[in-house]
Length: 315
Length: 297
Image (cartoon, rainbow over all chains, first blue to last red; front, side):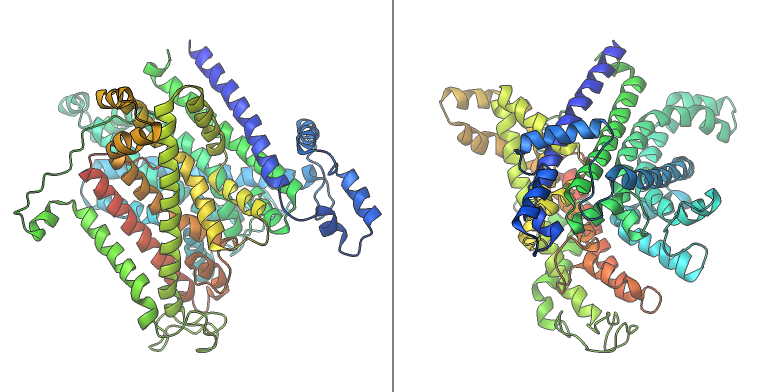
């Protein structure tokens, strides 16, 4: 039955993606103003404009244009950028690689930090570490990404000179250099993701630590660290895993701002550039890719939730 | 997820009780949050009366001055007084955050309640549409809407309010629909239906009063994030236009001064953070008084 549940979620996700693509295309295509006049300039002749429109299929109804666009997308062809006339796929690909790099880095930092800090807080319940973690996460909840990123730049780049102010990674750089340049944005994303999950994991750890079998383990003389590692953590990790998977989905939207703060050449900053240039094909391509990743991440969280919760398996 | 309906269990307050003991019964988080919010409200309402300079007055000092008695938070690139701009900004951010959340709550809860009450294919259609809208990361959705609105509307407060409301309304509708679906099976709704009352009358008179708790908490949760949302759009240069003293925009404008006059960007950041803390503390307390859990997804 579990396979059927997952399969139905997959099909649902597919239809959602199709509907999202329609919504995105429609929103980007109603951009006001004559595209031909914008690209070719005011002095362009009527014939040049109409030729341009024909080239971009602008003379066709929107539903037909959508189908042509979708056909291209399915072949990996997103069309040409209006502003630079370059193939969008060649522009998007390196940006996507950068965004994946940043997101993976942030996620790798996020998991251990969350587990360690929440365990520390749960063991030290209502004492120094727990209270500090609680206050810190409360502050973290109130700080937007662009403020956290700016504070990190101020402390670690401007004052301590440990990291660069801007994270403009280039393809020629070595892996180590890229890691070094991406550290501050990755830490920013890590902080935003972990503040909420630390509080959650701490609460579920405390619940487990209060349970009878943990008390039994302590009574039979197991050392405290072994109780935590072999009894408490595995049992409280299950609800936390779902939060972690959901954070993966957050990550995909959250990079948009963080990339802009650090001038990091990823998908998010590409999207914002395209919005400023009102470059509809690029907006469509990036919004669709980001939404597809977001839907996939949510699907992943969903499937994980089903697999980890025996009661949902029959659903 | 279905929200279980618990009877409204607000503390029973006797009339003879004094105000201080009544306040004492409220959760501490709510009181702290309330005090912070009152402070912001006070600054927003009276700020222009006592702010030392006008928000757009340039060259009140040299560019990017460090804090002094004359300019408590220093000055920005155009020599404008950052303290005055932060004070004026309270008005801008509070207004944008509260009106957009209010609009989202009204539209979202009406859609949710009607959808849950009517049921059938109308309900299915509305909910699937909402699923699609929610499947776009909210910032990407906001950017799409701003792009679609075009350059003439860009930067206008009504557009921003509309964008934030459009992003929030589907999420609120989902929550209130769950309440409506549960309420529809209750006897008093069946009675109202047999009496032949119209959909609107039932939603207004029977469903809404019973969903007040959920609607209030939803409003609080969304309002708690709205300043960050609006600040982020301002920071990206897609919020209100300069010289409007919006905090997010100020943070991005004053970033070049991160070495010479960091207070110029930390002052609006701190103002923004405390507003968010105040809103969240108040909402957490409110949720406890109403006996509801806070769901920040």
